[in-house]
Length: 464
Ligand SMILES: C[S@@+](CC[C@H](N)C(=O)[O-])C[C@H]1O[C@@H](n2cnc3c(N)ncnc32)[C@H](O)[C@@H]1O
Image (cartoon, rainbow, N blue to C red):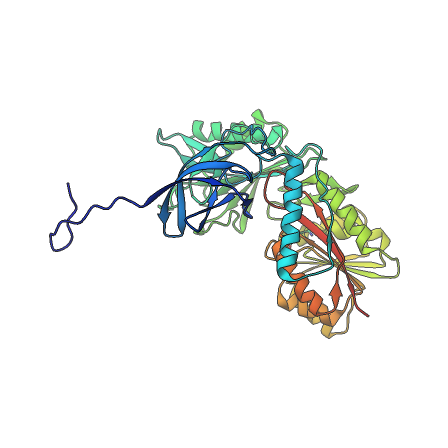
């Protein structure tokens, strides 16, 4: 039947505009999608690599062309077999279809491009330090829950750009114990009829589960994130989970009642164990609470920290400020070689861990301050305090102008800048260059193989 408008007139039924084309992929965008040009418009095509020709059917959407079907007509030399059933739907491993050495080269070229576009000249980007076995490296996993059509609760990752869960069996980036835990928890949630949280109705109980593993200590933390403080059946759940996975060290309930995509809430209840795990990194023991940051790739993190120490050039008559210090790992890993170390971090739980970690490792010339790094440096610089060396390792958003302006007042002799987002790092390097801090070398460490992310580190010296 034809549609009518308000006045009752028949509306012309228009076919949606579709385009069929054979296109060659020119490059990958920053999300690892193949880029081709259709009718002078750039289209991003998933699972397509440079030098491949694909036949696509696309339609015009509000934000550009939407690919409806895609058929690959030839294969790139760098394409490799993907051993993951949900690769095309899951939003995590965008580069799983590309040979690992090529992934590293692509990441390097991406950083070179960022520097060029920013007009930062004279910086050598070194070959990324990769992994021998670029799988099973993630020590932290977050899964969501949803009912499927058969009303069974499934768990998994979110499908790209959607709120739908994609169930998985064995994720290639996780270790065997994390994969087993996902399986067992999902079975128990079904057996015990624990209702998954429904975002639209804001009903149900279980929002997420966070699993964190200490790869060196073999300790395991499970965090149930619930929508309510009341967690009916939690005693039985904990007992059954511990029976089936006796290697669990601690189980925590985190309560998040907010309408937000942020996973963890403020409030916590320890359901079993101490409420934190410990791990060994760079020969030191660290306590890690659910809300504290801890690098997700243990093996690569040790290489990165070794580089940080080399670049910082510790001296026993100098003072180090470890800004954005988390649980204190970087500062503590090189504390012995400084006169004094200060760590500043905004997350209260992380600072509590850091203080406890200093005691654990018998380091008494390190002090941790819970404050915004920019405010701390501004206040201390006003009072004339100057760290000799600054290590900064901000979150993906990078640093902020308050912090960078305070750097200009504190005037450390050397800065080591570590970043998990070269885009914001390059932006901050531009600001630091204006303040007279220059770098010649950027080193890349692949902490996130098979994804588009990369970690970078550089030393900045102040022009005299
Ligand atoms: C990428 S993590 C690095 C942590 C630590 N350096 C490590 O390697 O484990 C960034 C840290 O910065 C903290 N952070 C974010 N914004 C901050 C701010 N404005 N001031 C101080 N710390 C902040 C986060 O809580 C997080 O612990």
